[in-house]
Length: 279
Image (tube, rainbow, N blue to C red; front, side, top):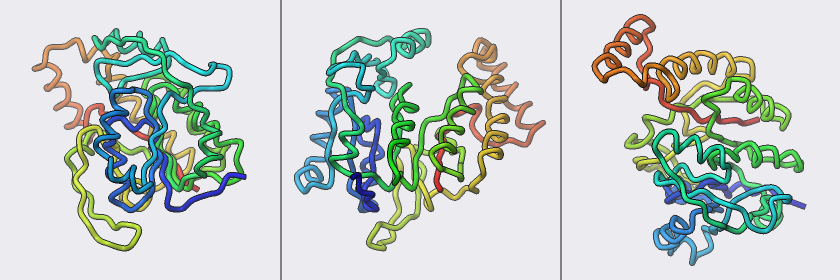
């Protein structure tokens, strides 16, 4: 039986520990998942004290289904946040000028981790193309994380709808689309689990807070899909695959100015979003 643990967070896609640092400061215990051996070693050095006291465990390897075998190919990207197990994602990254090299890593059985360490209060999932596999793995359990976040789809709207539908099938009913572009460098006033007030400045590549730390209205599934329709309009106009990207910088800035003037929108163009879900 898998036990739900209120003081536990899973950082699935640990990278350099940008989010783990915040979760530990909040007072949570953390299970961090990282496939890139170089980043694992950096995190072991950075969080030596938390590891020694048992507040942090690092699970080394790439999460993948049973039929992937005992080891899997992991594509280490020159931009370390873009590491992936999916060849198609590595090809996409190469099309943006971000080359990858293939290495072999141990396969991580997410179900074994649930059995060994318990079901977390919050689960941040950001593993470049495998988010949905991890999310769907929750279907096998009666008790699920109170809060979950994934990096939302930004190319295929039907895939975005499928992500929301998966959340609904798992029993999640409240959603937020959380802009990520302005989180690095921002300051959050929050509380630790023991009630201590503190201010926290998010570092580069951090994904921000969750739950009550996000001052943003919860929406139901239909409402969040409608919000994402507007977000996708901005992706199509200003995103990585838009004609906008081919324009000279001066024209791009002018088009952004016109868009903001006409719509009143003041956020990043286009930025990128995480979907937060709760029940």
